[in-house]
Structure formats: structure tokens, C-alpha cells
Length: 352
Image 1 (cartoon, helix red, strand yellow):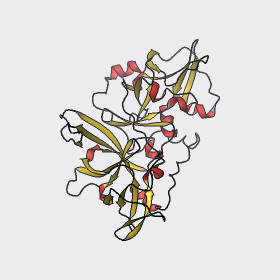
Image 2 (cartoon, rainbow, N blue to C red):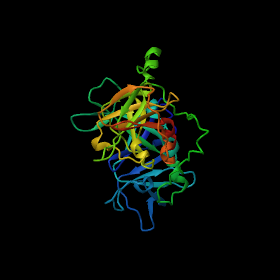
Image 3 (cartoon, one colour):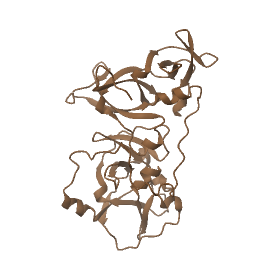
Image 4 (cartoon, rainbow, N blue to C red):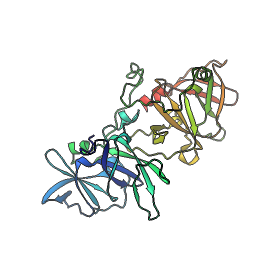
């Protein structure tokens, strides 16, 4: 990803809408944008007396864009041998952000969707009386709103412009193939946000407590499940934040959030072990946790019935018979009124 030559401390991009979401393309890769145009019967777009192959952005990303006919907006992408026309539905705009607000894909997205996106952009917008949006450089300005844009990997569809099919997802890793990968070694590791580091004495005390939370719905007549992780790994339980979906990611990834200026993936932990998750409609809180490597963050939507209990426990953990479930969990405990499972955050981030 390149930055503007005249202002190396900033990054310029073209933003456009697909469905209810905003995406971005590096402005250095764009030749021009056209607000009107029609795809020919041969599937091409005429630009500078040349017939360019067309890629429909919605189809390429696997986004439902029903009702979109052949008319639309087109972004001309510069190619090494031949240019390409990217068809979009919404109006495109040229925007600029500080280069520091272009963030790498966090795990597990750096493995799942690196072919589709190269970064996640943080954009601060102010809404004025006349309803227009503009870039906000002054963090003290009122009515500031932040959004996350997925920066598309334009080089990927330049490699195969004729294909209208969505990109295939990487094959899921098996437990045996990931056994050697004990820690994340990507460059996208997160630094713990300032103000969240804890004194050593408090950290030791937290290791002796478990946070119990419910990311799964309880069906009538079924035994309830709770999840438990070390209190030392819980960074915060906070109000719900806007979740930005990541088309093309695993179904176990609900999207990403902007938490304390960090891009954090939201995992569907309950669905990973075959339970029904609370989902966006019924979720009441977000629990933010940190993986054992001390860098990678993860969020999960939970109900508000969060508790703590002493750890280690007197009960003997139950053996996990299901191989698929066992790779996501450290173990489980059976209590009188509920089953407690211990998620393995490292494996969830690696195998999501």
C-alpha cells in the first residue's frame, strides 16, 4: 500500500458504498471515476476508446446487491498491461487520512482475507448542519464520529479481471497442522492500549479468578452453557460498539470493532462449538480479551449476566469427546445447574 508522495504522513483513498457498508481503494491505483456508465453486452466498459474488462465489486466480495442493473458508477483501476473498470453502486469520493490510521488486518483476518483486503482504515467524520461529511484532523472537534473502511486489494482482481466469482476461502486448518504454531508471529500484533496495563500484584490476583460469561442463548429445557476465561485476560466489558462486517471472512467472525483505537475482531465463540450465539439483536455487552501471547485481542458479544469465581476449581474437568469442539476449548466443567467451558483463545484466533 502506497502513500501520497507530496504528503508521506497521509494516505489518500477512494471511498464507495456497497450495500450498507463503505469500502476503499488506494487512490494511487485509480485513474478516474465515472458517475454514469453502462456495461456492454460483451461485459466491457468503454474508457478512452478502449474496452475494459469489468469487475462488479459486489460480486467479487460476495455481497448481496440485488436490484442493481447494468448502470452504475465505475472506478478505472490502473493495471500493468491493461486497465480495469470496477463497477460500484454508490457514489465514490476521494478522502485522506493520517497514515497512522491505516491499520493492518488483525488475526485471524490476516490469514482469512489478506487476498481481499490490505488494511482497515480509521476515518473520523463530522456531521455538519448541512448534512455533509468531511475529514476531521482536530481530535477536539465536536460531533466527531469514527468509521472503519476495508481497503480492497486491487491487485487481486487485476490478476484475474475476467472472473466474476467470489474468491475462495482458505482451507480450514486442522488441529494437527497447527500444533506447531504455538504463538502468532504476524506483524499485526496489537500493543496493549495505554491505560489498560495492570500492576503485577493485581495481575497475579486476577489469574486466580475466572470471568464467566454467556455468548450463547439457552433453549428451553436445555442445560445452560457458560464460558470462562482467566480474569487476567479480560481487558474490558463494555457497551456494544458498531461491528463492521468483513465479507469473505469465516462465518465464525462477526466483523471488527474499533476499541480504544485498536482494531479488534469479534468472534462467534458459541457457534464455534455448535451452540446458538446471542447475535447482534440480543447481545447486551462486548467482552474484550487478550490472547496468551499478550498481543492479539478478541471480542465476543455476550449477555449481561457476567460473574466471577475462584480458580483453580475443585471440580475435575470433563474429557472432551468431540474432536472439532476440543480444538477450540481447554476443557469443560459440569456444575449442578450449568456446564462451564474454557475457550482456547489462541486456537480460536488461529482456526476461526
